[in-house]
Amino acid sequence: MKTDMPVHKWTFADVEDFCKLKIPEGLYIDYKQDLPENYQIAKHIAAFANTEGGWILIGVREEREKPVEVIGIDIDNVKSYISKIEQIVRDNINPRPKIKVFEALNADNTKVVIIIVIPPSLEAPHRLLTKDEIFIRTGQSSHSENQQNSNSENIRLFQFKDLDYLYDSRKKSVDFKERLINSSFERFKNNVALANGNNTIHINFSCPSKNIAQVINEPNSWYIKNSTFFFFACPMFPQKETLIDYSRISNLILDINQKFDFINNTLPSPPSPIEGGYSLSRNGKNQKITESFGKNWLYVDVCDYFEINEYGVISLIINANNDDITKYPTWHYAMATKGLYLTKLANQLIKNLIIIKTLYTDLNYYGSIDLRYFINITPGSFAVIDVELNSKLKNNNIVDDFIAFQEDISLIDFTNNFESIVTAILKRFFHNLAVDEIEPKFIDNYIKETLKSIE
Image (cartoon, rainbow, N blue to C red; front, side, top):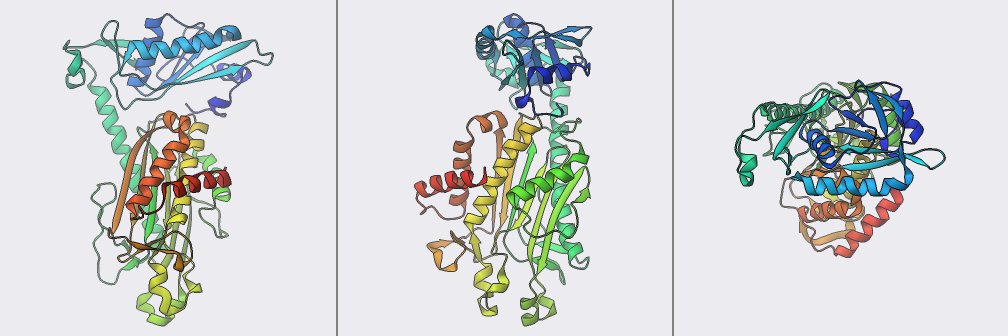
């Protein structure tokens, strides 16, 4: 739900301000003066998880589905209430949905509003064990759709009355997500092409995934010869309601870039407006190489692109080799461009994971994230841990010309177990790039030091 302040920072007064907006109960929100009995609270949590997610505010009195008074819960009861909510979810709903519970405390530390955040679930439909019912959120209330077949072991294999819309809406949402990611990739290609005289730009890789189509080489085309790192993150089921007002993204993307230094040159212009968001980009040509090999060898050696849009898609595309090729003699050029600098890529990957954690929670999104990275690798590349060529590892030539990684990550799990999840992703990242000989202790220490330096 889109608000001016992240829900994890809310106080009692912020809840009062929110309730003054008189947002009625509906698809995304429900108000409760006190904690309902087990069946009722389980029904609402399951219904939100089965549909598009939502919030339950406990400690708010409503009339005709609109909030009229923020009463709060006595602080002495809060701990037992939260424990009871967790037990209700654990014992009454199958499969168990993920939830996040926050406390909005008043100024004199006597009252709390409990805010239950329920993301849309990848495991829907969730059913109530007590009456074998499935609930969906449609408007002002949670409606029940009884199971047509009583075989609970195969419940996910059977059709449920009037639930086709759930699967249809999820499919439409997934298709929309793919369009958002593909559009971002196309903008990157167009950006590089425009920077080089509107010539056709091709990226020399083969991708088995439908997300980035294979590009066929054509005569007289311009190529990105360097290895390229692609990173995309997007809510698993982007909804019609945007996560962020596009007008805020220009300043947001500048703030993020200033902190994390993705596009590390002084930009000649502000972020460029795109469909529902903004982007930053940098393109550079190596003139020394052009002079040595002739105009037909004009070379795009730096292609960095960073984008955020209103639906929460984060895209980062950067050169994976050393982007300061001009410091090397021309004869050293081939070797310099084939060193894949893993610490640089790992550092950027960690930065992106930090952004996922902070940006989405600040936008009140706690659902699952579709996380992807791709690396298009120049043939003959080798892994380099340092920025110096003499640190090349033994027997670590990278035989793959394309590496793809995709994982669905629950943001609730991600925020609760951030360092361990980052460690697992980085270990797989290094393994995919043929550097198993790096000691695990090195990776663990590297992650800790990098997180400390960034945060």
